[in-house]
Image (cartoon, rainbow, N blue to C red; front, side, top):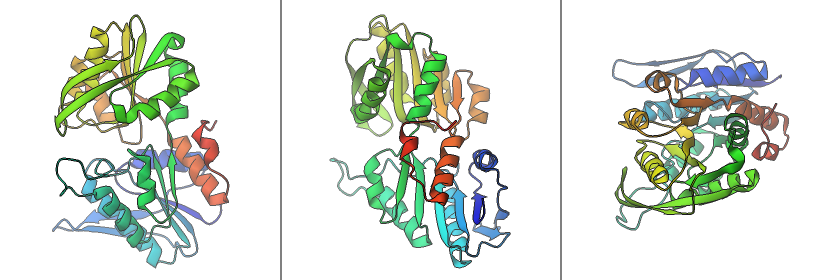
Length: 320
């Protein structure tokens, strides 16, 4: 592909390499280092003048450092006369801080702040995946392509759960109901949801199951799992309500704090995540974690964007 350059931030080099391989390109030369006072320094090692530049950086690991690195890389490419700079952000940072809650009206809306920072740094276009709330697209005045892991998830379910025709898709909270009903419709199975009451962030108080899971395989689906309190609680609830097996399928496996030990102690057959966030280390400590590779979805979105083609095919198909 002429006139296209792909650079990788330091958050997820493995995914960037997979994307570049898929497109038949070399990753661009870039050196990111930290000064002794911890300031981030980025040097783009090749000309980007007049090029269509894609920078792959996920919101994981040292989130604030990686976000800053992305902003600096975008700006470095922009002032080096790149014709267009696209930020490819598989897992969007601060996506959960997307509104003021009822309790404290002094809460920040940090997702909007991140959107402003990306725009100001010079990004012309954003490609991301499974935003926590799709309205975040409206925080930007530049085009945002919010891709979905759903086609890859459907494919995984059909290939890896033999009894999928008798399964029930379950949302661990009311917010994910839309995502779950969409998957249930496409598999032509039933769905259920769990209503949870939170006393404070990252802690769940009590849960109520709406729907019948008796003698069925339950598949919990959510866009992200962080400390896994909700999803492990939900699994217990499903087993006690008569489900035969419980799987969890989550787009972004953040798995911070006690997450891994909670999964190990929970009654999951498998916890399936995509590689929007690197999972190699976590898989060493937890045999239940399985990974769906979504690099081809991002690569195809980059190819289509570069060639000026429609991206909406990817909303319902996995590229071959």
